[in-house]
Image (cartoon, rainbow, N blue to C red; front, side, top):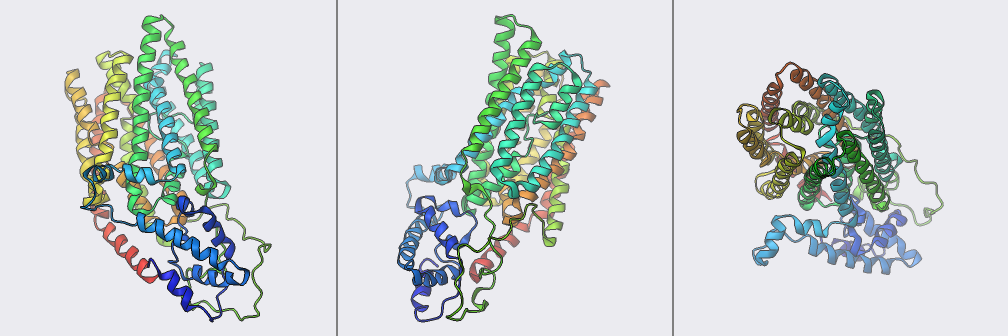
Length: 549
């Protein structure tokens, strides 16, 4: 296929050319070979894999654009030849192969926007990690009971469900950058309210309408939109590597947030002698600063992250050679012709609904289990049962988070060899077992040991799962489907903290850990049973589509 565009060009000389949209081709050519990823999922940009790009070049010959177009195609092809080389080459230097195994080559070759998204995720999870360490303790210092703390977390997640779903539903219509910027503004506002108010209901309103993470995990519209952008800007062979580093940046951000916040609190309380409530409020001032940085990083994203809607008429991508040819006296499409209306609300096709429903059900089960033992409740468990101070507590969870982050790179390499589904299941399953074992011993050292063992594999399923979802979801449906899945996850997760709060009030805190681990085991086995052969079907479908082009 490398030289197919030139073959079509020479064969098409003297033949009446099919009309095509030259403006769109010009937009791709302006991206240049250094920014080839700006085309995203638009395969018409890629070296003539669609016949209409060749037809357009012939048609452009009437206004002297064929020669520059042909030269630009050669530049594109030269870049694609380098990028289409196999990921594994025995002749390459061992250091290069090691970097490729770790996914660093894929990250380096990714676009500037992808790197900005990874930085955004680090900043966001840094803020989440710091606030999670003190959230429950802060509410308890304000005189809130554990039951009402659980209710607080549940209602916070309910508010996130509504806001995230609406923003994900309209993200491709109003603009992905706008949605990310709006989420950053809500995050900043929530931090300011938490830093200045002591009223339970005001804090609850800020958490519901704004962005506050009750468990240190992703919350708000960010992840669904960002993962859709990454899938849009990254080619399939390297998508798993990029997702791994995207997930790692978040886990590392949460780890450093926990460590930094823990020791700053320790210094302010024990060295400066400040009031504990004022110390906790300073954490939320820092949370607002992170929101401002998040807003700046959203503003500097380029237009390549947006969905570019294409006119349905005049496109031969679906019709191929069967599209009717225009007579010689047919009018040429004018650039002043009104563009098709942009669809504000995304839709899910009927054939995607069964798969989406199954994914939502399974991932909702996993999220419900996570809601029973979120990071905020786990930190409070160790603080209340073993009386560990914030500095040491931050160091413990920094260690577990760093281990979890490092394990993500191993997951990317395993997924290349064993597939996404098997990597997801057989790495996540041991972490579920260790989670259930955390409250069993009465010794703090054994509990911490089980917590560390859990962290070794707890995040290894994140990147393979993102790559798996990107592979089976249609490109135009990614934003809304991933948003819908996140809504289903958040909905089920919102019930967990309330149940854990009731159990903690009844001195059955340990039951929540066992319930969470058991449900996660059920999720792993269910996912393996339903999707273990799905990757082969998707791979076969992809090869058939490539062969038909």
